[in-house]
Image 1 (cartoon, rainbow, N blue to C red):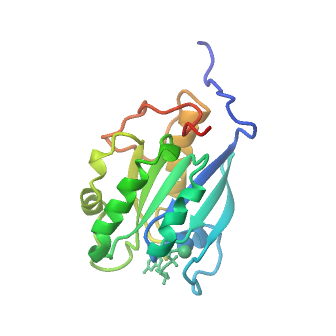
Image 2: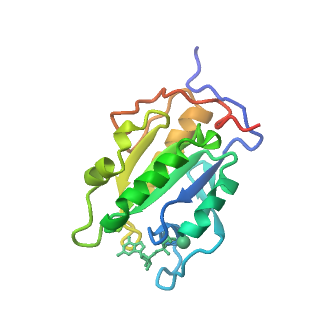
Length: 209
Ligand SMILES: Nc1nc2c(ncn2[C@@H]2O[C@H](COP(=O)(O)OP(=O)(O)O)[C@@H](O)[C@H]2O)c(=O)[nH]1
Ligand SMILES: [Mg+2]
C-alpha cells in the first residue's frame, strides 16, 4: 500500500474515544479515575449517578464515563452504551463472594448490541490488598477465555498505589486505535492469546443507528 498507516475517517473528531467504566459497586472505578487525574482519593463516596472525566492520553482524548454500580442502578447502564469504544470492567480482586455476580453482569453486558464493537479491559483492582485474587484467578472466575466477541485483556492494578493504571489506558487506546484509525499499531501491553488482533469488529464500532 506504500503508506505506514491507513486512516479510517469514520468519525468527525477522529482522535476522541468514548470509554465506559463499569463494574459492581465498590470495585474502585471512581478511585481509579481520580488517581489517574491526580486527585485526592481519600474521600470518595459511592457514585449515585455518573461522572465524566476527560483525559488526554498520547494523541487521543478519552471521554470516560464512570457510572454507579449498585444493583439498583445497573438497569440504567444501558443509557450509556451508545458509541462506546471501550468498556473497562473494574473488579474488586478481594471480593470473592461477589465474583459470580460480577461474572454474570459482565457476560450479560457483552450480549448488548450497542457494545458489540467495544474493546474490553478487565482491571483486576485492589491488588495491594493481601490475599486478593490474582489476575489469572479472576480470568478463570469470570470465564474470560470464553469471550470471542470482543478484543479483551485483563490487567492487575491498584487504584491506591497507581500500579498499572497507565498501562491499562495504553492498552485501551492501542486497541481502539488499531480498530478505528489504523490498520497496524504496536501495543505496549500484550494482548491476551485468546483474542488476536483481527477479531471481527464493525468499523462503525457498535452498529449504532
Ligand atoms: N485497598 C484498596 N482500596 C481501594 C482500591 N480502589 C478503591 N478502593 C476503595 O474501595 C472503595 C470503593 O471505591 P470506589 O472508587 O468508590 O468504587 P466504585 O463504586 O467502583 O466507584 C473505597 O473505599 C476506596 O477507597 C485499591 O486499589 N486498593
Ligand atoms: Mg463510584
